[in-house]
Length: 303
Ligand code: ATP
Ligand code: ZN
Image (tube, rainbow, N blue to C red; front, top):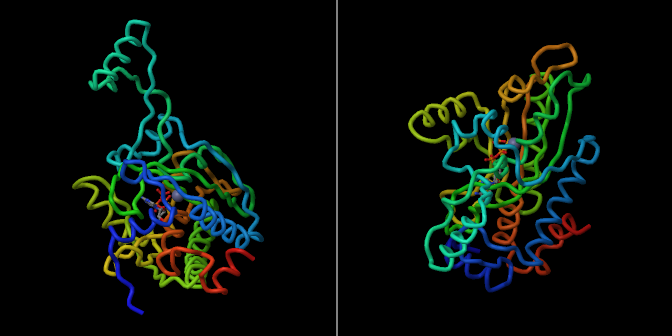
């Protein structure tokens, strides 16, 4: 069977099947009931695979303190992706003006003030500050699911501005953390290939901003800090990253004073499955109606 990769066609078919619900803004479409069933089933499958790992499940809102975004260096590396929450705090006269401007079709956003909040740029960001101090003997394992915002409007159904990441975060001794990251890369590949996806892994880099960003990206690749699992979804030549596996070394642990039980500086690593991207990869591989998917795939997702 020859699979064709056509962004517009794929997008239109997703809409026609009620899988995605466009709202006029790029990368901000709604998810239909069946799309959600697939995303939920995959997330649950990840939970079953990781059941015996003993991860502590935490939950954060999709916003985080502006001060935390600053401290974590997000504005140094990815200012182009950040999203900020602004609200109205003016008086009656200003409220009338905003209303008049809205109805006159004039710009009004400059009448808003930045709040203490920004949109979560990676599901793991709110986690680290909570673990300052000494870790227990074997370190820690956390899991989190959150909405993530990234300002990268695109016609590609696989590139969203608001999407969900299912993440695991490991903190502990450097050797343990690196071994954990590498082990999960194998696990992730097995999982995705086992679902009939033509998944492959490769070393990767984050989209650091600008000229200095090129150097940071090259260093990240050279040190093999980031791996991605990729699946062709909208292009054969440029497969889509559906999961990432990141070794932060002591980057976050030194910011937040996270130490091992023996007081040495801890390392951290995280891995994230992009729930929308995995869902779209499954649809691309097996068709628009999950009822028609191969039994061995359905059996894993809906046991
Ligand atoms: P870190 O925590 O170190 O910043 P991360 O693993 O949390 O990294 P990424 O590697 O940038 O963050 O993204 C994780 C996963 O989220 C990707 O593998 C991909 O599946 C998904 N993803 C990233 N960007 C988008 C997007 N624009 N639309 C949909 N899914 C995305
Ligand atoms: Zn992360």
